[in-house]
Image (tube, rainbow, N blue to C red; front, side, top):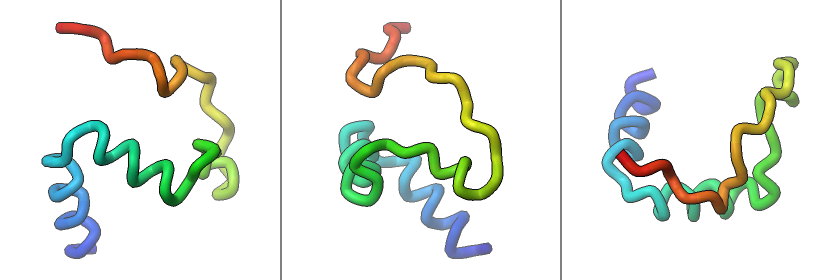
Length: 55
């Protein structure tokens, strides 16, 4: 549990593109991994290529 928390804190400091690169390295099709754990698929919010909303 402690290692998971430390990793999460590390990832929170990463730039957005670094996070996207990590996801695409391990899940190139952006599959909904929760489905394989028995959860329902969430509705799509927006494509990953869409820019983030400006604040």
